[in-house]
Image (cartoon, rainbow, N blue to C red):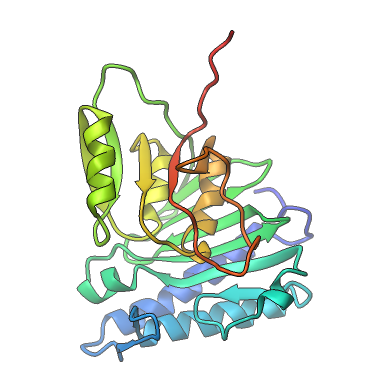
Length: 266
């Protein structure tokens, strides 16, 4: 594969870190007790979140000591500090903690490199599924499953055919119902974590509308995969690309994941 975007560093090293974190998660996944507790925002936290966070942050700091790391499980980093960052790692050590607790396998390790507010490298690893998605700016998107590697591309919806729509298994709400009602004929595929974005990147679904709250670490890695696969992650209201680390809040606006909208000639 190509070298990491503007860094003399193999992407395989980032993939290896994600897979190693996945192994840490799986070791805890086999236990009867996950050490679950509640964070200040009332979302769940397990031993697996913490173990994955420690491994990834330590390995990235060792690999690229000059690039800061922002993790969901990091101590709060003030905006006054973050706004000076032009390049940084953005990670979600265990995306889909609720899916992890349900033991349905639909959770991921997300590692993204952000450069000037844009995800330029993303690795998404689903440990139970033994599947990794990788995307790099100015490169291709790939899916690695059980050792087999293949390039992936988004698809454009074919007029007259039912839409294939990815939806959250845990967070579906009235906004999604309204969106679907306006879409016409559709097939809804429910899935947990950032795998939903990767389904768009693979061409397994046409669109993923996320019309509820998410944070930047939830989307960044898979966003890079979608971009490399010929897709886009855009703000639902404006159609503008999602950007990272542009404000104090780390919450994303509502967004759509889809093939790049083709402009009509005229």
